[in-house]
Length: 94
Image 1 (cartoon, rainbow, N blue to C red):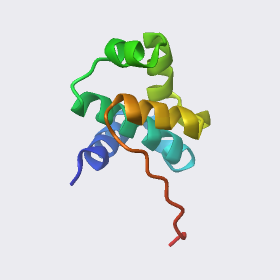
Image 2: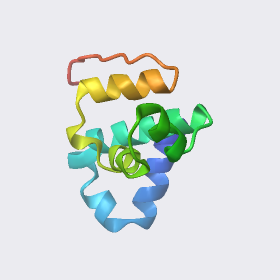
Image 3: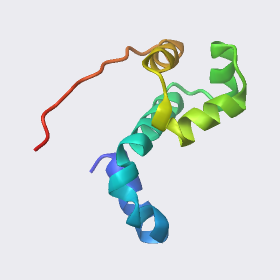
């Protein structure tokens, strides 16, 4: 089981509101978690990433915790700052 699935399972157990609204907010939540995991795997703090992006730590926190309205251009800037490449896919619903 990957770390995202494990995190979701554990959070559903301990947070009733999260569990009840999970499906509705899943995509926004997933983006924030992916960004946080990418930052952490790059060995950076929020402050260090903010410095690379010439912004404030609070902006990084907001992106990681409330990514529902993030622009693709911002995602690309974050990816580049992390030494990553942004890839976007459109897939069919199952």
